[in-house]
Length: 72
Image 1 (cartoon, one colour):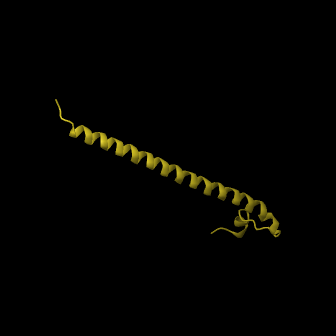
Image 2 (spheres, one colour):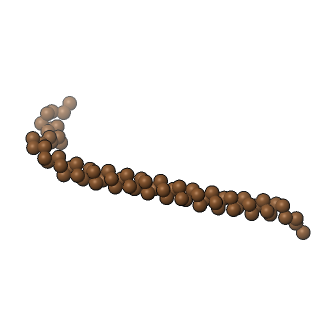
Protein backbone atom coordinates (compact mmCIF):
# COMPACT_ATOMS: atom_id res chain seq x y z
CA UNK A 1 0.00 0.00 0.00
CA UNK A 2 1.15 3.51 -0.74
CA UNK A 3 1.80 5.90 2.07
CA UNK A 4 0.05 9.25 2.12
CA UNK A 5 3.39 11.02 1.62
CA UNK A 6 3.95 9.21 -1.66
CA UNK A 7 0.49 10.09 -2.96
CA UNK A 8 1.00 13.74 -2.00
CA UNK A 9 3.75 13.96 -4.59
CA UNK A 10 1.28 13.31 -7.42
CA UNK A 11 -1.88 14.99 -6.15
CA UNK A 12 -2.13 18.74 -5.92
CA UNK A 13 -5.36 20.53 -5.08
CA UNK A 14 -4.70 24.26 -4.75
CA UNK A 15 -6.37 26.36 -2.10
CA UNK A 16 -6.69 29.23 -4.57
CA UNK A 17 -9.23 28.04 -7.12
CA UNK A 18 -8.08 30.62 -9.70
CA UNK A 19 -5.24 28.24 -10.52
CA UNK A 20 -7.83 26.07 -12.29
CA UNK A 21 -8.55 28.81 -14.86
CA UNK A 22 -5.55 28.13 -17.18
CA UNK A 23 -6.33 24.41 -17.12
CA UNK A 24 -9.97 25.09 -17.99
CA UNK A 25 -8.94 27.38 -20.85
CA UNK A 26 -6.51 24.90 -22.34
CA UNK A 27 -9.04 22.08 -21.91
CA UNK A 28 -11.66 24.17 -23.73
CA UNK A 29 -9.27 24.90 -26.60
CA UNK A 30 -8.36 21.25 -27.04
CA UNK A 31 -12.00 20.15 -26.74
CA UNK A 32 -13.07 22.58 -29.47
CA UNK A 33 -10.16 21.49 -31.67
CA UNK A 34 -11.11 17.83 -31.19
CA UNK A 35 -14.75 18.51 -32.07
CA UNK A 36 -13.80 20.47 -35.20
CA UNK A 37 -11.37 17.76 -36.27
CA UNK A 38 -14.01 15.07 -35.84
CA UNK A 39 -16.55 17.06 -37.86
CA UNK A 40 -13.96 17.55 -40.63
CA UNK A 41 -13.21 13.82 -40.72
CA UNK A 42 -16.92 12.93 -40.91
CA UNK A 43 -17.57 15.41 -43.74
CA UNK A 44 -14.52 14.23 -45.69
CA UNK A 45 -15.58 10.62 -45.21
CA UNK A 46 -19.07 11.34 -46.58
CA UNK A 47 -17.61 13.06 -49.65
CA UNK A 48 -15.26 10.15 -50.27
CA UNK A 49 -18.15 7.72 -49.87
CA UNK A 50 -20.18 9.58 -52.50
CA UNK A 51 -17.23 9.59 -54.90
CA UNK A 52 -16.72 5.88 -54.36
CA UNK A 53 -20.39 5.10 -54.99
CA UNK A 54 -20.34 7.14 -58.21
CA UNK A 55 -17.22 5.32 -59.38
CA UNK A 56 -18.73 1.96 -58.49
CA UNK A 57 -21.91 2.74 -60.44
CA UNK A 58 -19.83 3.83 -63.44
CA UNK A 59 -17.81 0.62 -63.36
CA UNK A 60 -20.95 -1.52 -63.03
CA UNK A 61 -22.58 0.26 -65.98
CA UNK A 62 -19.49 -0.30 -68.12
CA UNK A 63 -19.43 -3.98 -67.12
CA UNK A 64 -23.12 -4.37 -68.00
CA UNK A 65 -22.54 -2.69 -71.37
CA UNK A 66 -19.64 -5.04 -72.09
CA UNK A 67 -21.81 -8.07 -71.29
CA UNK A 68 -24.57 -6.90 -73.63
CA UNK A 69 -22.27 -6.11 -76.56
CA UNK A 70 -21.96 -9.05 -78.98
CA UNK A 71 -18.50 -10.45 -79.39
CA UNK A 72 -17.08 -10.88 -82.84
